[in-house]
Length: 227
Image 1 (cartoon, rainbow, N blue to C red):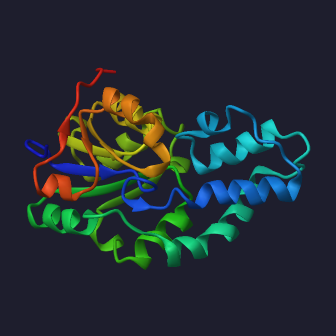
Image 2 (image 1 turned 135 degrees about the vertical axis):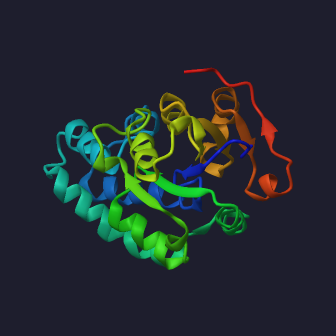
């Protein structure tokens, strides 16, 4: 999987760390607080959007919210940053893979849709920050996933051609972002995207249940649609 690769770029939530469980509860509490009704297409609507784009979605979608985008983002940060710092842990085998990659000269980057302060808190809390040569959020580029912008920005930081980068992603729009950037993508199993497993395997080049699969060479090669 890493043959010919100079860099590995990770989505954070659901790919590198086990954190997707936080957001359904945040959405539930937030919607209850303001009397909002979740659209049937809610989860697909926000999949891959940046933290800023998702806040704007709330402002645009819920006419009775009466909050600015900045107020929404600040409330979410206040609700989640402590959880990320205390209750979020790396996916199985992630630490071992990061150490192995570093020992073999692979550059490492983060390309997350999350808020920068939340991402930094999550990475620092588990000592992950020391492994990464670049950490970027979709809020720092023109468009969130499935646009390739954040992945291309990390590759630019690392000074690595996109074709020499391997992406780790847990949702279809994230996989598409990596493919749109001209990178190979390894789909990562996660409980919250398991209903989309067939689509993930269709879009990705590889599929793993956890990072031990890479260490043990038991990952699945996928038939990827070239984007």
